[in-house]
Length: 305
Image (cartoon, rainbow, N blue to C red; front, top):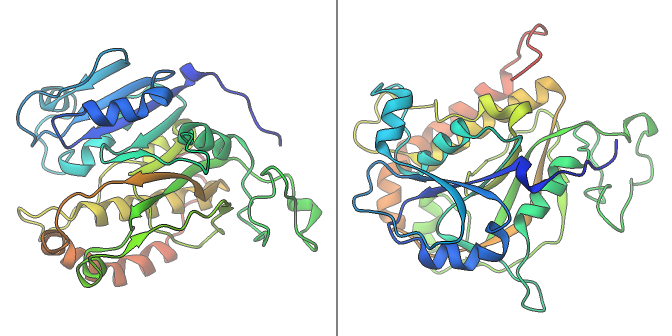
């Protein structure tokens, strides 16, 4: 199974807008974004008009568009960070890349912008190896191969459904850890991609992901809401739960999930203490949720997401 060459018009970049002025964000990404169609979804709770510079091929969706398509049902919410999921829903492209508006491109040692979209596409169009762990990481990356002892019968790999990137600066911690370590930042750039083994769970964040919508698109919806949620939204936990749903689907369909490159640089946003108030009950419930997803088995008759 070799890498598939795709065209720029097969890709949508989805941006969840949680701030009204997107000027600096869009300009930082212009060298990358200018090649692709963009879907920008304004958080329905955000007041005021969005400021978006000219020169981009984009569609903008607001609360009225969300209400028109999904109605006023309380069973699913596209507010806050979850507004990005509406972008996934309305996209008609095969490949979707999700980038949050508090992220800017990472740069290499020469100061050049790292094309995160190209890396996601590489991850998605090269095979994944979920059934036997390759200790040299991604055997399809330039300069590497399968490790000694890797079964030849598994070396063709399988299709990759989901690519999960990472970020520098603001570390990917939960609210309790952020509150305890407010000054800790992530400065480690690990030049590697790996396939997450089958049946292994992992936290997923829509801050930096790419996926094949034809393979796993229907599984990416913010469908996990807590009955005791009230007015507080544990959005990052909801993201993780949705990610575990996608992982179960990928395992069942014998698809791969990759983690590692590409990196963004994530800027500061919000308060760890305020996040803790929103997330704490959800964080505690993870102890029960993870075993649930680990135990889920789907019917052999289910052959698509």
